[in-house]
Length: 425
Ligand code: IMP
Image 1 (cartoon, protein in one colour):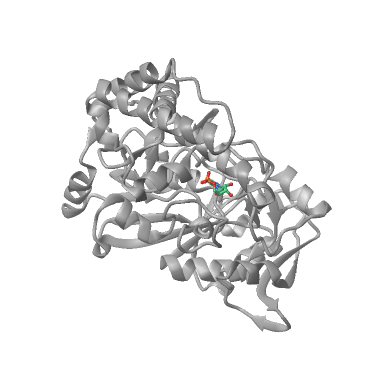
Image 2: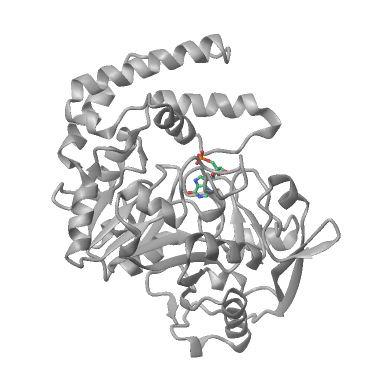
């Protein structure tokens, strides 16, 4: 049963990139199954920092084959830029190790422009999207008007179709949104160039993934964003347009559930969120600012400051259920080292009642008040800890308490950004 699914258990940015890098050591292949370049995964290897948006994080390990699955939406120009950046850092980007599904969907410049126009039109009720064109590309996919990655096999026809999508969007931008039309001069040439570069990577990836799984080669399925941003299971409409939960790996890559033996949830030792929407444990005070500064909580993709708050076990229980988590990884424990005391939300008060199940209704979750347990801080630098026994007693107590509250084994704890700054459970 050789498939592992790696999931964000909160609102994304949990540090999945470095966990993927750890799990990739024992994997034959790594496959992204949802989202697009709204994601930002950072992997540190020695002095080198890799900022990935589309390529699976396993790309930095030479033995790992990488797959961009059919559940993704791909901006071809951005993917070419990312591959060039990786090649410049000495990474093998040959088509022998990277496959792009022919059935993923293309993000055109039209989608990006429409993403911005839709957000502006929402005014005070905006979602706070990354403006990478994710929502509009998935809209086209569902409406069956999208452009498949497989079309890049014929770069000139593909470029014509991209140009047609921009001309179509221009009508909307001008006539409906009252904006200026996008210039069309360079678009066809850019699309044609990107398609020429990417055509050698195209493949019917569900066949190759199943062939790997059938002979017992481990496939690591890399989730993007997080459980609470999932289109079906987050708080609508403050979420992304794809299936970020474990089920998304099956549909976004095309294999059966009997192969999955490990579902790894990743949570920060606190919580963060970028963009708008409910966030029960958000800290709008000095403690929130301290966590943001200590954790360098600014978006990899957009540079936006992330909203910061305490760890929320009600959310983690929910993530455990909807994903069938088998274990938990706790990241950035070191960020809390400076605090006198640390809180964990263990329940909510909703309209005078105490509840332990996360309300799915967006208006209800916006009204909850977290019920906290308070633990003492440890006030010691823990970045050189490599074993549980190296952690100060209060840090161990915090980790053990999270383990007991969630009922999940904690298999890795990160204590710094470097690859080796981790404690394994
Ligand atoms: P979109 O995916 O760009 O449409 O953005 C929808 C929501 O998901 C916004 O609140 C974004 O800030 C959030 N989001 C999208 N991708 C990520 C991510 O990789 N990490 C954290 N938040 C994300």
